[in-house]
Length: 147
Image 1: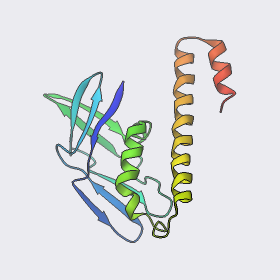
Image 2: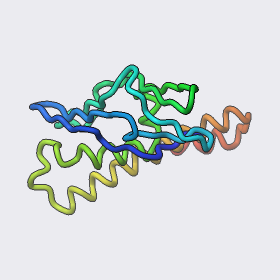
Image 3: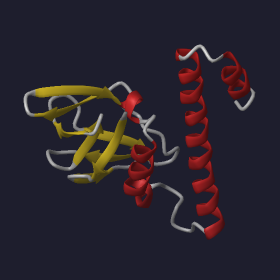
């Protein structure tokens, strides 16, 4: 199982359209089967988030993590399936989103609900994958109805 242990930006750069979350050693770590792997800037070293749509733009980028001599890699597409990653990233980039200056508590609650809904959908998809792996036909059909 993979979880995000820590996600802190080394530097945040904001331009007209994007928030660039720059990563460096000791600022980003993941746990893989209870082993902590630290980010190493071998390939990608930034996360690019659209300020208007709040979507991650560099979905094809690959991030490397190291523990001793072992290096593992995750694409951005892999990382967005980790709920902690999305929550921490939106917490970091949130103050730089366009249109958030006059945000009310209702808007914030709606954004939180949208994130929760997205996480629930991802969880259902993971459970469907698990049901397929275990050949559990009843669980599969009951979970597909939730989509």
